[in-house]
Length: 240
Image 1 (cartoon, rainbow, N blue to C red):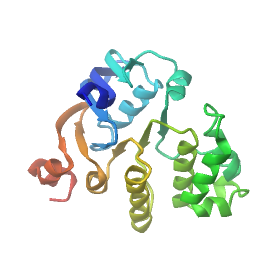
Image 2: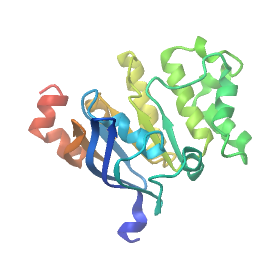
Image 3: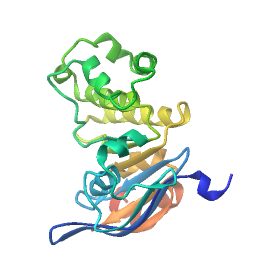
């Protein structure tokens, strides 16, 4: 298989501004098929802006975004979602007043075929969601809500799952379980994942490759092991 056939997402020289504030500066990165790619950096470094721009929620000032060989830089959000990209936003984005199963069904809006099969797969992956399918989403614990957000994403049968700060606000034991789930999504279900995380230790341990963001730029990139062993990354993000 040639290199371009391996590329799932390719971003070239992407810049994004919020008025006079430049959020991303000529960023280039890629996600290959079968990869977990981590975007690490402090809050405000540009990671969330990157994910929102890929999904079309934020418009690029310049540069290009290609998904499965097609340019999507200025494509409408619903068409990008239909192409197979799903975002699990910071804060999870579930509808608290709706039931677990209603939230899951929302995830299949663009993929109406095979809904029951995927629902059964989600309940197999997350038995607690099956047990609480009629329960209001807002009554779930933080960890359960994150499982629901992941389950909703899987209901869309995505080609690329983007996760924005999935560990935010969760207890350490729940974070460990969450990252076991993400690892299983890659290793057993072969999902492609672009993961934005302040928790660089967790993210880099499961990622194939990573990019370090600072002030809207990528300052370091490499395999997970290269980043874990990098002195600057260790001191700034991995506790020395």
